[in-house]
Length: 174
Image (cartoon, rainbow, N blue to C red):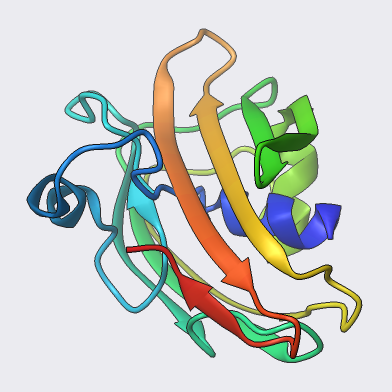
């Protein structure tokens, strides 16, 4: 689960995840939605100086399902080279319980999406399949990934919330 969660969170760098679990109206959440077919949203902060501009993220199936292969297709534009030392502050919660809270090396994590550092300026495309474990406990999972360069410049910030049912199916938080 940690790899899958980290992968989804980092996907928009590719890495990605940003649902408005911080509150706000439905209209505000729609403004934060990452383009494409996924539960990803941008964090409710200013993204004008982000180095990574996510153009589209599609998940299949959407929402993800326990025990089912998840295919991630993402496209993003990188405005500045991302060097070694970039990092992601990653949090994964199960309901109100924090399962993971780590500061991870971005360059180590992006190998999960077949990228490596440095990430050059320009357009990047990712297509990746991930086997989600059948044993994902039912409940609400929230992922937050706040990504920075080695010099603490914002790369992106994303969040996602998915609720897995007892039968392994999932639903998106609205």
